[in-house]
Image (tube, rainbow, N blue to C red):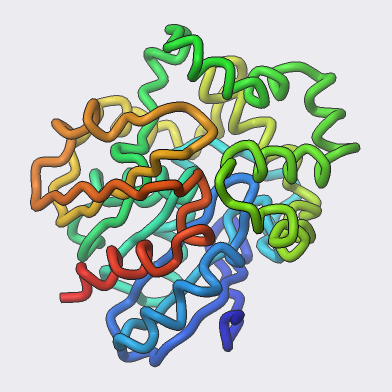
Length: 297
């Protein structure tokens, strides 16, 4: 099932495309996808939440799908502060004072930052894999070798060879990430083609490459987000009601929710998902929707 409605809304930087379900008077729920995914991840989540009275919105992140930059001169930044500001701008443009935020990967990062720094805008948070905020001060520090091995694509994107590889082979490369990040999800190869067109956004490569270089200190960020980056660097706690979903079959990185627990100082619940990989809402839509529904109060 796909979302029944689509829209576009201008912000200061973007023309944000989004899909939505449910009645506009319901509690706003914003679902946020990651890389290399799109709003198709929420096709089975949205109707469950809409049936519970939520107004569900799923925006395409910068560089994905029909979302476009409004000015050709704007830096095609993929830094975490840009993603968070995009979310705030999206809410402002639609007149949403506060919403339940739920996301994973890049989208989870935008949701966590917004919840940490602007708690009055967030009714509740569902975050896959915990405190999904990067501390760039530690970007040069190695982690466990098993985790490092799964980050090969990030190091690949640090090189111009990697940029060209993403440009020329984006479908093959991203489909490989889908399969290896979700090793127990047999449907990944057949699900990928529905999302593939979103990865051919004209800004996709630039945004992705900037994201994976900025987080390692290899390129500068867009100056317009510097103040927000400085706030993020303080590792602000998340005080809003939060449900953390953790997959036990995630093929990228490793389990980190236990290490992140101290950053959540408000109501908190941890849910472990068995035999679920990185793409939680598409692999386990009922579990993802149930977590969001628990915050519809």
